[in-house]
Each structure stands twice: as structure tokens, then as C-alpha cells.
Image (tube, rainbow, N blue to C red; front, side):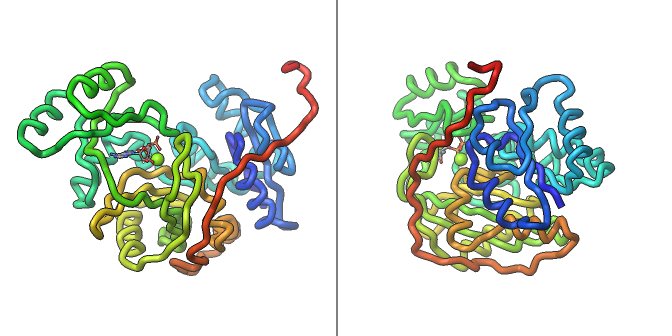
Length: 325
Ligand SMILES: Nc1ncnc2c1ncn2[C@@H]1O[C@H](COP(=O)(O)OP(=O)(O)O)[C@@H](O)[C@H]1O
Ligand SMILES: [Mg+2]
């Protein structure tokens, strides 16, 4: 059994965990468009590939699948999730399982406005969101929303172009100086992250890990603490099942006055996943079981609590690549 990890970037630990889970049972193949993506060199075999947007990119991926007898494929970056989902049948014809959600779901989660509409329709508490300045201003007039508010791109990621705005003038400026911006009620309270695995065969949520975010830095969780709360597990399970996610997902949640507000979903391994793994939520083994045709047993909350994750930097040294000197 061989696993292909696309756009591995700097996610060295994710590659290492897969190697650990597969052991003698298979190889881990990594790709990235940059030869200086350190996680490439954690794989058993690696390929430097064209950019995801280059013509013929997907055929390069199919070729790797054939050559390396790949059993399962996943990507670690948002825009590639929809691409994999779109080609699911072609992958299947090659004997490759796409470890991820449907095309429709990948698209919905990439678009924070679409996700908001879905959550509202299905009755999940979430931050009030506006896609038009006029609708936002009407809501301010009506007292539905108060300053400060949060302005961010509809299809943003990595906390790029996100801002807090305290008045109409700032909101207007931010709204017109970004790409398809949305305006949101400013959320206070405890930020929570959830790393979940939804069995690829049964469709059941089989593992949920939750952490309270203690410190955010450069758009990432820098410090966090693991915790458990049955009511939150129930809400997450309901939310995930109703959406219909598959495989690994990462959810951002705010907790205020005992209410859990769903904020956003990344249907892939999130940057903070190593915290979950270190506490015992080994989702690589769950993937391996699924690729072997085995359904995973549901074990929600099967991890150590009160474990604090603190991020720090690592480096890797390699020989310069000929055309990049
Ligand atoms: N409505 C909001 N109110 C307060 N903080 C927010 C709000 N939306 C996002 N944030 C903060 O900004 C971060 C990034 O926003 P998010 O919606 O998760 O986008 P992405 O992670 O895709 O860039 C969140 O982790 C959270 O800390
Ligand atoms: Mg986020």
C-alpha cells in the first residue's frame, strides 16, 4: 500500500507520521512544485512537479500513481482538494482512493460565504456574515450587528488580509481593497480547533480531537491545550455528519457563554494536527485501515487531555538543486 501526499510543503511531521503508520506495509510518496519544500525529503520517494495550475498537472499526478502503484492520495493545500475530488473517478480507475470530501463540499468550505449560508440554513450558531456593504450597513442601522467587526476574504486562507474594523470608513476601505471580501460579526470568546476523521467506508465520524487555542501567531495556532467536552463532541459529530465530510478535516470553533459557534472548516490535515497526533489521535492509521478495506471503530475523545502544544522552528539542509543555484 502506497500513499501519495501532494503539495507537502513544510508539513514534515504529517509525512513522518504516515511513514510510521505504514511501516513495512508501504511507501510514502511526496510531491511539491518547489524543490525546497522540506517535507519532500521526508518521503520514501519524492517528485518535484509543476504548479497545480499548470496545464497537464493532473496527468503528472496520474503518472506518479501508475508508476508508484499508489493506493491513496491526499493534498495538504486548499485549492488542490477540489481538483482531487473532481477527478475521483479517474483515480478510482487507477486503483487510487482519494482521501477527502466531495467536490461540492470542498468548494463550499473554500468559500466562507457559502459555508455561512449553509450553517444558517441548517441552524448552526455562527457569526453573522454580510457579502454586500449595503446589507451590512442596513444591519448596523437595525442594530443587528455592532462594531468592531471582522473583514476577511470570502475565499481566504492562512489568515491573509484579515482585519478588525471599528467604524464604517475602515470597513468600506477594507471591503474595496481586497478580493471579494465579507464582513462578519466580531467573535469574542474561546477559540477551539477540532481535528476529525470521518471513516472513508462507513461515513461515520470515528475520531475527534479538540483543543483550546492559547496563542495565535502569524495566522497559526502557536500554543494550545487539549481538552474534552461531551456536548462539543456531539455538536461536532452532528455538524460533520450533516455536511457529509469524508477523511481528515479541521474545524475552527468559537465558544461563548456555553454556545459553540462554527467558524470554518478545512477538509484536510490542518497545520495544528501534530498536537492531536501527539496526544494519541493517530489518524494516519485510520487512513491505512480504510485503504486496506477495513472500517474503523468509532472512538471519540480517545486522547490525552491537558497536554499543551508549543510550536518551534526546525531546519533541514540539502544540496542545492542544479537549476536553482
Ligand atoms: N468573525 C471573527 N471574529 C473574530 N476573529 C475572527 C473572525 N473570523 C476569523 N477570526 C480570526 O481570524 C483567523 C483566520 O480566520 P479564518 O476564518 O479561520 O480564515 P483562514 O484560516 O481561512 O484564513 C481565525 O483563526 C480567528 O482567529
Ligand atoms: Mg482558519
